[in-house]
Amino acid sequence: MIMKAVLIIHNAAIDEEVNEALATVGIECYTKFPNILGKGQLSEPHLNTEVWPAINCGTLVVTDQAKAKELMDKVRQMRTKLGKEGLKAFIWEIEDVT
Image (cartoon, rainbow, N blue to C red; front, side):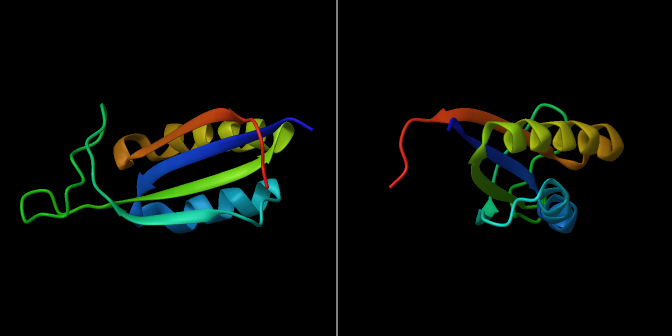
């Protein structure tokens, strides 16, 4: 079975929406990375400072190819709906899992 990793970097304020997207796709297992700092192309910087107080989260999922594609489609829909809120997803193939 081909496995894919999907890393979603998102504004902490929309973490619940990301969790709902995972549930809708049927993904129950994931890893969360809190307190991620950064600057994207469309959103304001998320640096956890007085000037730029927002902060990001990361959600990492390893799943089968079909669910990964479905999750990427959900993220694309969310980006359209949420605009410049801060949401980006990356996908790559997993070679091995122990």
